[in-house]
Length: 402
Image (cartoon, rainbow, N blue to C red):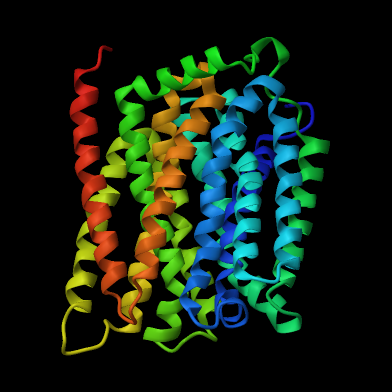
């Protein structure tokens, strides 16, 4: 890699590959009312499924993208995934019903799994331990720029065309990533380190991944943290629109929140080597229990319809900040003992956590009733469970042989 790409460019490329997910989700947020009105006028709230269907497809895609990259190389699998992503975007652009859009979004999500999951495997090919966590945190900082810009990009596209134009932007984005990857990144997995794509070694790698107690706990906590993030993403636009009557300014508030929350990646990169991954995750979840619990109590009062807008924006920022302090560290914790089967491990970890998070976020999002109670209640419960599991992880690690 060194003869083509510096570490800074490598981190930027990984960040942009990760951002395929954020761009594909966040750019759709301003389009949800228009999609609901055009394709599901009787039940406008079903437009939220445009987000969770993509997440579901992404989770399904992680089941095989990692093992395929272990067998055929990292770059080839990413390029194939980007091609599938482009196909899904094209089908969604041409769809005439919400059901067809949802099916195309599942396909698009399957394709988007490749740059996300194989990107993690590439990181593990080249780095390990706390250094991997530090570089992941910096890559996540690049990743956070896209949530800051994506809603405004989506709103701008809608202003000059309609919601279908967003899918054309997805095609252009994927082609740029494919070209950058193809021209600048040398294949990080040499042929002598590849694993045959056969059932027996894949099953052995799957069992090894799930047998490790720390990896298992990390997967469950990742599921809960992603569930919190996706729950907020599915409900945040209706909250701005219905609860606070700020639909027009939503992209700008969302962008400001994403930029502020992006400092979590800088903070994590600065302190993770000294403090440790598990401790930082536990602290972040403990703070979120207090904040989301306070929002739940405030939203449940009958005196006011909802907490003040400024308080909600602060809480939204804290949740995105928590994601920046937890997800990269949890990935590093889970991947650390799995370096010899990095592709398969990345797939198992990503598939379970992403599909599980989509299954959490979709029903909670459909519970939106014009108040903050479903959102605050769901995040409070999820953060409490994740915090308890991180405490248990500490006890489990203390019993493991050195």
